[in-house]
Amino acid sequence: TTSIVIQLLGGVLPFFERLRKEGAEGQKKINQYTRYGTVIVAAFQAIGFSIFLMNLEGQSGAAVSNPGFLFMLTSVITMVTGVMFIMWLGEQITDHGIGNGISLIIFAGIIARYPRGFIDMFNMVRVGAMSIFMAVVVLVVMVAVTAAVVLVTEGERKIPVQYAKRIIGRKVYGGQSTHIPLKVNTAGVIPIIFAQSILMFPRTIATFFKDSQFMTAVVQWLSPGAFLYTVLYIGLIIFFAYFYTAMVLNPVEMAENMKKYGGFIPGRKPGKSTSDYINNVLVRITLPGATFFAFVAVLPQFMQKWANLPFYFGGTGLIIIVGVALDTLQQIESHLVMRHYEGFMKKGKLRGRRG
Image (cartoon, rainbow, N blue to C red):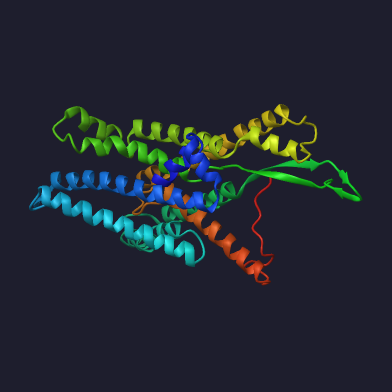
């Protein structure tokens, strides 16, 4: 969450924008601020979670036998220390391995739940709690949704670009044709994570006001599965998809860079006409991508109600699995090609789908 916030601030605050343009040194400073922000966010969430545990009661009594300041302090220290260790471990994997370390750790944690879930589903079929037909339908839906997430993640719209020929001395420069690849879903999983963080914030605040009827109602309204939660969740995902795309892709800057180096889009004048065209393309391709990912994000709620699924399928987890797997595979391909191997796949290349 902290990393996403700082990425978004890079497009809003000049300070972070300057750091982003400073290269490796700027990235080191950004990583340092991300660590500080992570400690603050982790401490805040740990306090809320410890208060929730102290107020939790079951049939056998209270969940915490000795609630109080000491329990809260030890809980916060333990959870924040764990977060910092995981963050350090992720950085070591990133620096000395292949792929993004934190993403791979999250990937492993999500994947580890699936074998137990499939075993539970098999046991439900065996005892008659789920029909064989329903189990087959669930498996088909899972495969189809996973394939669709891969297609949307890799999908892109290619805008053709041509460069005018320039003669300098006896040499001819330019004249080649290329393209600008615009992802159908530029933001990836970031809008979903950000939407979850925003909707979780009021619930975290509510733990500090356990005696307030209004805050109790807020928790019910913003609990996963509630109608208001679902509507706000979908709306925030689509909003942040557009917001993040606008932060990382600047059509005006892209048009100016093309004009500077003698590039142009066939049928479009350099400058404002080009930037307007790129902006219109981004607006059109972002909506279906964001809408589909919003559907995937709310899919677990419907799967558990409709099919009585014993495990969590879809949502952020599925998108992270697909995104991390594709990103890691692409990095493996790059390393193999650099070392003159044929590649992990036959042609050593992952291609995006054409728009």
